[in-house]
Amino acid sequence: MLRGIRESDISKQTGRVKKTAFIPRKNGKDDAGLSVSQPNGENRGQIKGRMGNESGVFCSLLAARIRSIKESGVTLEVCLKPTERDPFHSLIKGVPTDRESTALATRLAQRLAEISDEYLPA
Amino acid sequence: MAISERIRYGEKVTYTGVPMQRGIKLSPFVGAGVLCGTEATEPKIAGHHYYTKFQAAITKALKLRAETGIEFLTFSGSAIDDSLIASISELGEILATVNDLAFQIEEDEYGLVRPSYHAHRHCMRLLLAMAKSSEFIRPSDIGTDRNGAIRITWTKEGRETELVCPSEDTESPYVYYSSEDSYATEPNITPEGLLSRIRWAKDGI
Image (cartoon, rainbow over all chains, first blue to last red):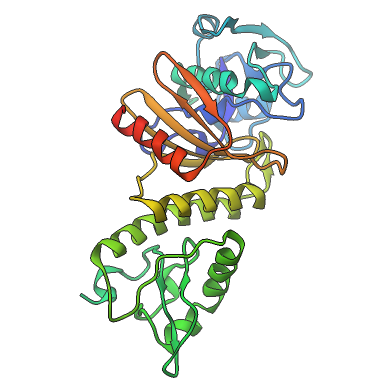
């Protein structure tokens, strides 16, 4: 799976993806899940257009590894959720967005970052 | 050793001192995170030239001091302490990075980028208070998330302590800390509490 991220979501020291790439947004923006998309052998420009990512920075992670993340009774899931622009759009479901679950949401973001690598399309 | 021998042109530093104008001492100031040596000629501790060059920075520093109520470390041209300079230089670099976050774009396609004044104020207050009370431990990372929260992280050997200063006016700073087998948040964080958590991340105790 691919996720559009900011350049600042890549650590300058380690080159690893930071958990800020997976911290859910507030005010209901990520209540349905965290947006990802399936790769389809496209170049950077095509992926940028399909995923609406102006910066052209992405990270990749395997759906099977996302589903293997279990924390405090929560198991993450990945579901296909096509949009008009992106037929491969999917959602990582299970990351809580309420204020009381900040610690769990941060932990899950940390776990997702650990299984992610910067993705450099052709 | 003169200050100009330790601070090079173009280097981001924190200038702290007692400026003088025509032999009269002015209020002590700190230009934490707002001064860049590129505009300077020869950096000096005191003197009319230095004062006028960095008038805007000094104004900002005094405003910050008035808002936080924190008395800054100060020195005069004739009494420079090497360890103080080292800690100020270190602190200045970190505060400059935090300060730079305020000059990012407001938001992008992923959400907020620039932290709010609320987040900055709390962040600066905690960092300065921590620096004043003890040695300052260099963070592993400084940045913002998609909610515009400032996140400052200290990591070592699988342990992590993160100061989070949310942008929302209704939220207070908190600490997230984690190891391989545990994690939690600590609300209502104090400078002492933050330092204790940072030491845990760095030393495991």
